Length: 254
Image 1 (tube, rainbow, N blue to C red):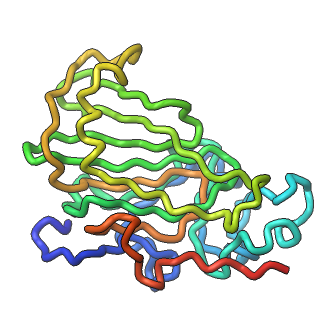
Image 2: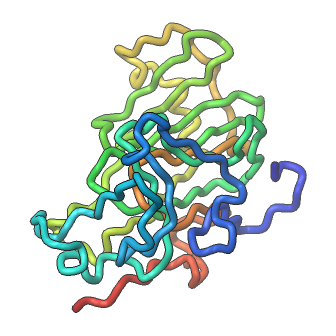
C-alpha cells in the first residue's frame, strides 16, 4: 500500500475530523446485533448526531458513575470534535481495518500512536508487524487482558499473537481528559514473538522462528468498543512534540 512510496516523517492513517475518515479502511459490524453493533461518526461532547435506528449508542462513563447525563458529569473530559464511535458487545465482529484487503500497509515508521476514549466496555486493537526476513507477527492490546501472553501458531502459516494488557485512567481519579494517546515502539515488540516464557501454558504447538529487525507494519485493526480520533505513525517517539492538530482539545469545564 505504502511500501513503494516516499514516506514522510509522520503519516496520519486515520483522522475523525478529515473529509473521508474511513477512506483507507474496511469495516465490519455484527449483523445479528443491529441495535448494539455499529460504527458511527458523532461529536464527542454531545454524542450527536445519533446513528440511524435501530442503533442505540452507549454514553461514556460519567465522572461519578451515576445515571446523570454525560454533559453534567464529564465536562472537560470530552472533545469538542467529531470522533468515530465503534460499539459492540462482540469485539471480534465489529472493527475497522487498514488495509481493507490482505495487502500490506508497508509503513516503516517505528512508532504507532492511537488516540482513543474508553467507553467502559472491553476494547482491543491490533497491529501486524513484519521483520526484514518477512516473518509476520500480530500484537494485540486489550483492556480485558490481565498479563502479557504469547499465543503460538498451530501451524507454520499462522502468525504468533502477542496479547498485551491495555488500561485507561479511571474516571474516578479525575483525569484532565477521558482520552488517551496509546504509543507503541514497534521494533521493541518483535523479540517477544520468540519468548518461551510468555508462551507458557498456551495452546499453540508450533514454535516460530526468531524474529529479526523491524521492517514494516502490515495492518492496523481497531475493535469495539471505543471512540477513536486519530491513528498515525511517526519516526519519533512521544518525546517529540506532535503537530498542533494532533493534540487533544477538551471541552471547557463548567
